[in-house]
Image (cartoon, rainbow, N blue to C red; front, side, top):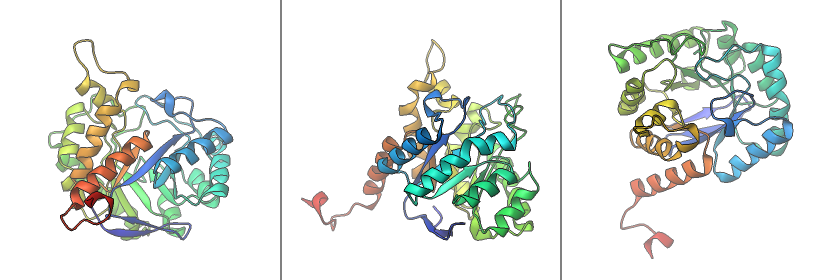
Amino acid sequence: MIVRDLQLASGQRLATGRRPLVMGILNATPDSFYPASRVNGEQGILDAALRMAADGADLLDIGGESSRPGSEYVDAAEEIRRVIPAIRAIRQRTSIPISIDTRKAEVARAALDEGADIINDISALRDDPELGSLAADRKSPVILMHMRGTPLTMQREPYYADTIGEIIAELGERVAAAKSCGVSEEAILLDPGIGFGKRPVDNLLILQGIGQFCRMGFPVVVGVSRKGFIGKVAGGPDGPLPVEERLAGSLAAAANAVVNGADILRVHDVRETAQLVRVLNAIETASLETTGELAE
């Protein structure tokens, strides 16, 4: 893990590297791949956000455009309509850090104006040339995720000869692009993009190699929650597990990511993941000098 205090766009600070952080997913979309994660309307999203905060989320990630394989582009006006009232309502009730999951500068600008703190761009600043300069101007941390193609095309026969090496090289190029826009090195986080233009074996190799991504020197965000490769790995002769039955496999993958150094887990199931993190952290830090109820 990378120990770093991220200066957020709102002026708050978010500490990474002391323990893994839990990022709760809020999908203000009608078509995200996990139906139970879809929350609609200002009150619905607010209720879900407050529940996640109570369940142990350290930050929230709000998106108005599905990035499931095969999903279509959503224009900025519709994306803004979906997310901005929700961000405004959440910010009126809690100061929990908010990440805006978008690849459009227009959407990110509107979200930052309403109190969002971080830009999470699945295109790593490739899709909108203005997004990098916006992040720099607003001093917003930016999550650069690895993806080949777009959500519509990314799963059309993806191939890697050297999964980890190629992803690291391509993320390095995106880091250089962000810095050329004026984004501070201290404001960059990396996401290897599990499930985005990857075969199941690539996703497993990424999890094996989380430590190599950590050695790039930036906090690492990992999103494995209920993704298709978990259904394939955990399935049986009847086929992959449906998305509703992938919680245990998601927690296993999340635990592996934590043990190997991931800084932030992006998840649908906040309560269960926060419990997992607490137990893993207790195991890692336990000693005979432990004080309090654990020593009784």
